[in-house]
Length: 398
Ligand code: PLP
Image 1 (cartoon, rainbow, N blue to C red):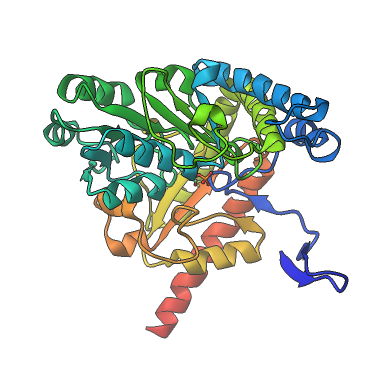
Image 2 (cartoon, rainbow, N blue to C red):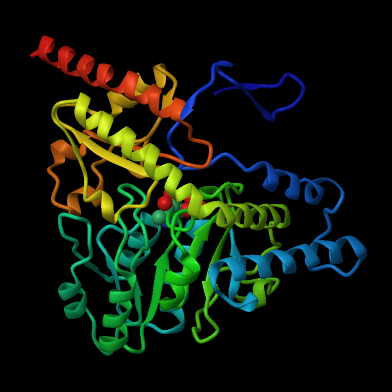
């Protein structure tokens, strides 16, 4: 997308670089907004624009829309409506979980080494400890147990990883936390999991659960932190006292309504979508592993969400590979979306024991509700050639 300045004002206008259809395999980074979500949000941008904290009719309409969305999100997340706190996305939900807990109950915090930066950085900033994972990306439960103790105030372990799709044994983690740090709150970042796993069920063991709308067909910049009634945490944003004082600031009404509509459609299609994407993902992975020598899958497929194909290629740099793929209209990413751009080695792959060299040759192809067989065919045509081209040019240089 190229951005140009309008001659009439200073608002940047986006012009599509081309009208060619693209093969979008970066759903773990962000998904297209579902038509039902877009339709649901439009009135709250055009005619129902009242501030939900106000008293007049437009305000009451906005407030009612938030209440209904809260009920829906609560139902889909296995929570009570009062336990749903709307946030400005997954990062804010994760930050609120960590900083809010530690402010309310100071004490050590513990997380896994493969958490998203939105969890691991706050925990490291607060002097918390990081528990290792094995080569399959699974948290080392014995290390977790040793890191716990009476004073520990928060444990955060994600449900599914954003780079590899590898899931964590959250019920086992919860068992250990309840036994060895009974006073600690357990947070799970379910941002990548919600589209593919029954978070309402799996998240029951957690006190705090984060999700983000743009990972399941809602808009960017809106999410939820479930805070169980039994858990207390301090607000990070204070002011107007919205969200029962847990997150002040006028709510993003349109975004919240769209998120709830997207979540409703996503959950009702989830079982079928898991099967459909698993079939597509397995065809994609098997095709790549067959056609590209020196390629390997990171972690066992049986432990992954159904939508992620994550590989490493020997003697290839992901940055160059992504460039060639994009030239052929295939959009993917290498490390976590939030850190790509700056090509630093992935902390997730490093924690799993992959060499720096292999880490630099990683590729994440993530599927979603719009992915079709044609997208998989396109990758299978383009990718082996692109890898070969890069290896040939490297040999030529050497
Ligand atoms: N947690 C995980 C596991 C993620 O994948 C992401 C986004 O990539 C986030 C948190 C942050 O969410 P957001 O982009 O809504 O801030």
